[in-house]
Image 1 (cartoon, rainbow, N blue to C red):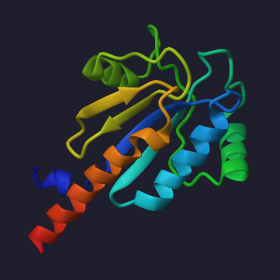
Image 2 (tube, rainbow, N blue to C red):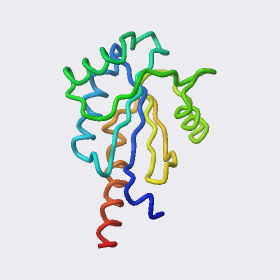
Image 3 (cartoon, rainbow, N blue to C red):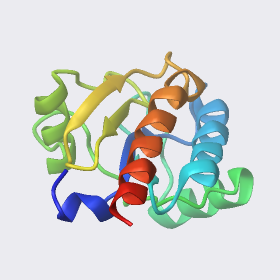
Length: 150
């Protein structure tokens, strides 16, 4: 692990939508992950996207207000972006290129290690609870490494 990487958290990058069938379960579980592991060792990074089923129609301000009020979201919520196609945000171009997996719906999850490498990616039918043990293990490794350095 590089010296720089010591202070970087594990990240779960997710393209989110407010009006999707996966919204409630994902936001609830993502917030629980953030509460349990963040913000020093882990962060959910949420990117609203309206490309799938037009399920994120609101403005950035409306989306932010909704998820904080309804789900108590405390993780970073970025401005609405495109995640696929020619106008895709550079973050997503990198994620797709690195993982070989392109979002085809809302709530695609990309797990990023402390060095910025994509560990894996999952579609919306894979629950946050299913990948939680992997995240817990990665966070545990960061904590153990820090203890060794003390």
